[in-house]
Length: 400
Image 1 (spheres, rainbow, N blue to C red):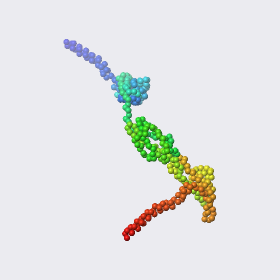
Image 2: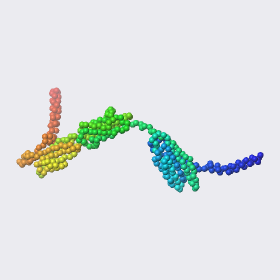
Image 3: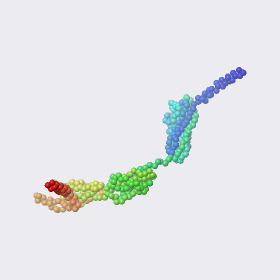
Image 4: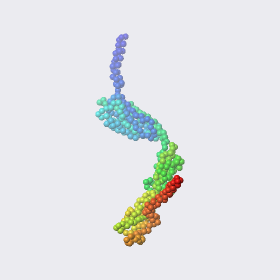
């Protein structure tokens, strides 16, 4: 009986002795695994990236990875730059392959292998990405270890409609008056503007105030408007858009119109000490401003000139034309004659005459402005003085 028990003990010891190395190898063998980062839910048509990672229980210095995907559009792939000796990555259909080595070193734990960029499909559904491969241990023999595969699935969803917001103010342009800094010599204006998605109406007004806000009554959805007989000067077009949220801000567009000639003006000649004549002229323009003056002498075009122009003689028919910045003109003429004016020493100076009636009136105002102002002051002050004197006299009478 004792002998049987002894034999069983010996048998057990031998079994344990011979099986232990095998169990040790199985228990402590190197392991490897591949994983795919989960990008979460994605909208249809959205572009996104995932990382392909590998991990090993022991130091490793090489990897081979295979990636497959379904219901996704491949965009690009890049390898981790820490893998210095590489082959690939290459793509064939819905598969990507890559081999890389860490020259002169090794990795432990988890390491990124690839980054792959995909585009989600146009329809909602489910997509998947999986990765598998092997690593080579840094054990001097390059022992290969098959890695367990990893995968991820992701939901492709139709994005929710955007939350409505107030639209931007329309952008205004004009085919007839395109530049707001320029004056134009015609008063029919055509304006146009854009219509953003969701806009259900516009409210607009044309006036002479820079900052007007149109009322909240829609004028419809048309995107252009023509205004005839626009007033001279600066006019402003104001417009705002309406959508389901409310009215937008207001856009303002400036139109500048000048239809009027420059103001009438006269030509004045003054004889200088050397016997020549200095010619003076000047005027203004109500809207766009004076651009230039041109001169004709005895019907001959001289060209552009300025006031204080020297005339060699007095026997000239003079024509000065004033231009405003849009091309409106006013012509002033000074016709020579033989009207004689005797000087104090009895000699005769021949001085040209022949101003138009409106030119004579303007010259009269210019030459007599001081007396005109004095007359106006007297007309205003005399009644006041009479009233004050009368008041003083009445006060003294009442006191007496």
